[in-house]
Amino acid sequence: MTELAIAKNIAKLENRIRIASQNCGRDPATVSLLAVSKTKPVAAIREAATAGHRAFGENYLQEALEKMDALADLPLCWHFIGPLQSNKTRPVAERFDWVHSVDRLKIARRLSEQRPAALPPLNLCLQVNISGEQSKAGIELAALPALAVEVAALPRVALRGLMAIPAPCDDPDAQREPFARLREALNKLQIDIPGLDTLSMGMSGDLEAAIAEGATLVRIGTDIFGPR
Ligand SMILES: *Cc1c(COP(=O)(O)O)cnc(C)c1O
Image (cartoon, rainbow, N blue to C red; front, top):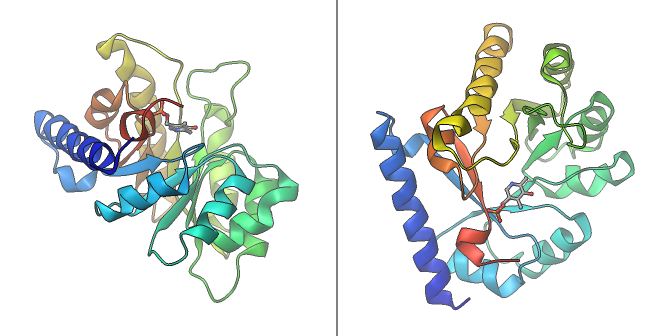
């Protein structure tokens, strides 16, 4: 992808987000774009940053750390969105601003213990297995409230909301169902837990449905950086 193509793709997505927000009576400023840069080179991220973009999502720790080092001159915001093993939490706690893929207490505890005191609390989303798929990461909805209460009490992390990757579906109406379930789950948690303001849901093929159901952050890779 050329620099122009990446800048153009980001502008197109910002436009899609604006139209989707307006179509459901939402302020487009309440929906942010996370550029998912996994497997893409440092140069591509630099190009997106030159176009004014700041927030990037990465799935693979070693790859992410190398890119962060190479881009340390830029004021970027890094989101970890991939599966996280408990023996790999320290660099995530030390280097990232957000983690979207927390689905068990052990991981959240370690991130809290390992978050350096000089940094603000690490922002977390709990990943929910919203379509109930056997092979998928994420906590089941029934177990979510208990986990959320425990994570919210940890001192060095800030529980911000929920993340989900629904089972793929091409029908725009049917796409909304799992997103609505995630929104309802967040609304219930908000009764008892302060500070929950994030619904990380929606990707290239379903961001309109996600925004209609309240997404505050959409995660887009392919439509910005091209196919992997
Ligand atoms: C890869 C990835 C994305 C982006 O997917 P695209 O299909 O490339 O837009 C979003 N969220 C998560 C959790 C991912 O792993």
